[in-house]
Length: 308
Ligand code: NAP
Image 1: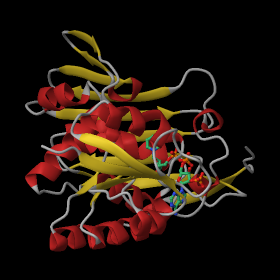
Image 2: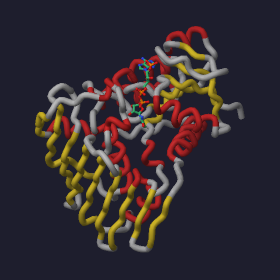
Image 3: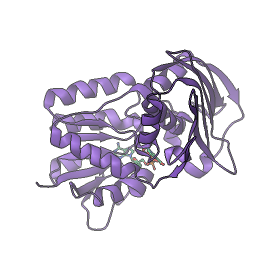
């Protein structure tokens, strides 16, 4: 079978760190081109400064991986789908729920694959955590996602703008895991979003959810964490406590601890190939919906200005 010719659109941090090695490590794909307005791409790989230029001048592509900020994703995805090109959407899948749903309908209409990728769901501890929790009664959940924005997002202006999500940019990864491993749906009951006085997106948030069985879920997001960083989900159940840490890579169960390897993007590309070969899409917007609900229902507090 011929490899799927894929172009990476938006050649920034995640494209270089994760997409390039994952594509090169998967024989189902060949990296056909890169697109980015201000980057020069990779030695030996055709590069264009816009998707328009790539589609007009080639090389031909079967798929694109959209690694831009979310605010510009819709137009790029719609343009690709109009050509029948399969689309991989980095997380979050869009800047609004409605635009993602429009893309999903468009992909179905043209018979192309749309994949809303949630990389944290492919962390090594997540599938076993989901299996272990499936038979348990959930009593209480705590999510703590505290990191230093200056370390992880230096100079990323888009992340502080409307649609950039602020601290929910990493926080949505935690929600992508929680919505996947917890056996019941859950919903927001109240939230406080803390916004720097000079920014349009939160630097911290405190959220309370409840699942449909009544279990409380608390989420603590903070981008002002210096020193040790936390990406932890703790689930208390009728059979003891499960803890996922390091963003899902380490799983602690009452019987012992498993340390996994970094397999997230290899898993995403394997899934994308399977979806394309099977003529299917995978567009789960649950994590984005919970974030949208926090913006819809949360209190706002203002804090000190943030400067990079
Ligand atoms: P980034 O470093 O700012 O890179 C984004 C790139 O998109 C920039 O290099 C920019 O290109 C390009 N771009 C902007 N508008 C474009 C357009 N219209 N057409 C083509 N390219 C365009 O951001 P990032 O950290 O890689 O994050 C990108 C996405 O991946 C975000 O949704 C983020 O949530 C997600 N993500 C990030 C990480 C992470 O650890 N950083 C992890 C997982 C997922 P120029 O520089 O050439 O202008």
